[in-house]
Length: 118
Length: 118
DNA sequence: CAGCATCCGATCTGATACTG
DNA sequence: CAGTATCAGATCGGATGCTG
Image (cartoon, rainbow over all chains, first blue to last red; front, top):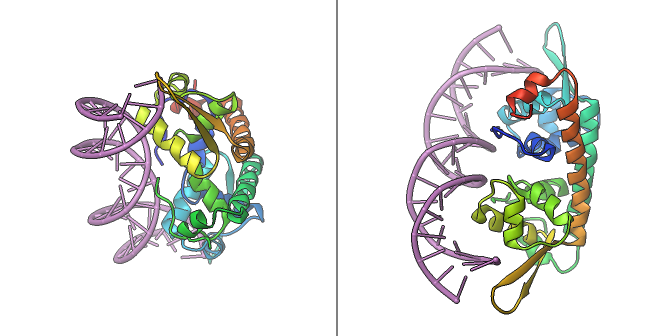
């Protein structure tokens, strides 16, 4: 993910931080509890391992996600939301609720049909 | 802005809706009150007219932004936040606060310096 | 002042194959 | 199971010039 060279306000920074296609869903899943790479992959339909790892590491860079690696075989790793991750998750919650709003609003059937939601 | 062909959850829909580089800042500005194209352009440093118009119209498609056109010359148009826009703005507020968090947290100077924030 | 069209380089994403 | 590398197509964003 490319970031700006310069930020004029904090909002831009956070926006960059959750820009990726899968980030909100990853945060959503992680909020349910720590998870391994493979479980996340199962839970998030359509994501590739590359994308999952890439976006996880970006979320980690911004301090939204933490990671615990356990020794031994088979390899085991757990990803989890940090405090900051839980805070940004509040925004994700609002997004979810607005999304439900859009999906259920009357008079927008065409719009939704277009998007494959109906 | 390209959207998915199919959504598996409302969250994805909303995420797509605010994905663009300038959308959160536009929402932020509009929350201060209705505004014309040219004022927005002045208020948002670095945005081009094309991007501004494009993202405004996408925000309008999702029902976050409304638009009033007045007759006569010179042309006059006012963009404003809808109710739904004000709701998604709550998420933007959280993003702003998390951004401030990241900017002011101790021990991350290097990270922030990298991003041109210090 | 508001808005549209086009061209082009920068980025993002996904598929695939490979390593510890 | 976890993670990395690479390559190609799709998308995005910015500059510029034109219209009502």
